[in-house]
Image (cartoon, rainbow, N blue to C red):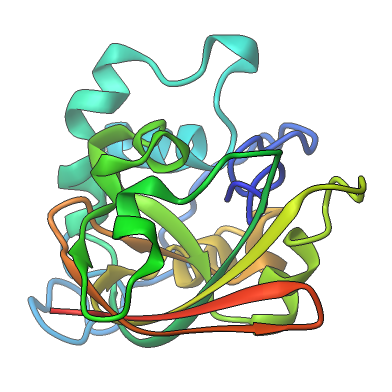
Length: 204
């Protein structure tokens, strides 16, 4: 994330090679359109997409092919509905502009803000763990930064965490779910505590 940033966004962890063994990682129930471990069969291209999502290729970021196909891949992951968090650490006069200046009652989508549009299709990673998200509000750790913790009630997110657990990806501990670019949100409340701006939003 952006701080859920430099790790979930920047993915500066080591690259991990893997091979998908269907016999070791069966889908339960296989082929189910609802409730299965993976709703649809992931193609080799989907597998590559997920690993590029976890680890963009060096400084070149996301490939054109990836950008054009990641939505179809995320559609095949288990769905996540529930609360997830995203931590941000912003410099100077930066603000979360896409969230309508953090006014309760305002509606927004992630695609309006430069800290979110770097993700293909406006898809944005969150964490199921508040503790993990909070750690990214202080990821840079420099004075003068603005710390923001977004608590989101999600309805149509993709559960990348369950995929990461299946393939033993190094990002599995981050418990990542992906809020989709087509989603819109309403700001429910904004509060300040211990130097952190806590923003509650709900998918609508």
